[in-house]
Length: 411
Image 1 (cartoon, rainbow, N blue to C red):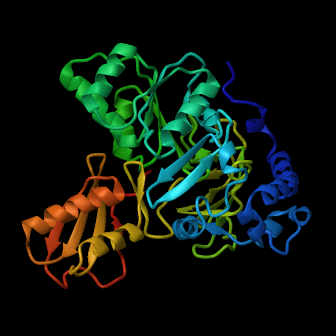
Image 2: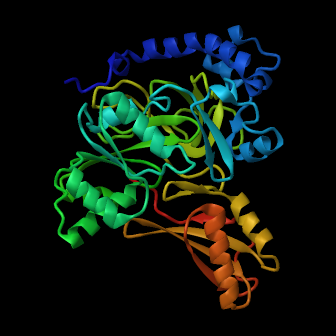
């Protein structure tokens, strides 16, 4: 069995770049034919003229942070869909809300390549612990596994004991889900005395893959690798056995730009990840993810020749990913609207023994009933549970920060 998914992974870098740029005009032509948003992006530019990165960089970026307002004004997708709504396979509702269309292809999010790099092969059972409810993550991984010929246990999130018992009974070889949830399931299996030794591989995403978690899995003899993906773009980059940066997916064109602009950053400089996705159903042109990263020099020792990025290095805005879901400044503003009379609010994200923690700090006099109201509102708005602390008025910094991610960057 080949170590590589296909021959695209080992092309000469010059050949790959030429193929990407040669495909741009035709892709942009098709996008403009089906997507009102693409037509706005290309206003005044002929697709046939976009044959270089410099020409592409002259097009405006589409920011993820703008989608909530744009889709509210022009439902359902603000014209970003590249085919009629009635021809789509699924319509997702991610927190925000942001709505994402999915086309009919089995592996439309291109996860098969990333799972193959993790070690999955046809016949391996995958216990998929990403969410299937409203958001696309569960379907992303399932589509990639099906394309590889792997049976999938659609486990979803939560229900730790049921997850552990299913793992012991069905004997999956691989796990997919957020980085910290696998640790929770394995520790529960240990408490119950269950044999989960069939599990050998893990593919994680949707959260910080911290050094402490890497060591925990290594100590158990597990190969657990990560990918960087978004609900809109699918896989952007993935980790190989070399564990030296994340290798760009073959189906995207990635730029690193100066945060807050569309201008390409100097080579190696940390900037915002901007992605063009060659997807007929969801043709994204210069989609600014809000994530920070940087290109790495050279290619991976594993033999894959595509460019690498250093992985997730923070947010260009104040959004943060917690247990696979984004929390955003707009959500904190919604909490303030639901609970009037508060002073400043700050949502603090931290890490405790490899698990994400979230606490809402609100300036208000001590009031148990208010704390309960805020906790319920926090869960309703973010779909995540977190603590609430009422702090003295005037005690939170006057620095404009409402989402404060204090977790250490992954190694």
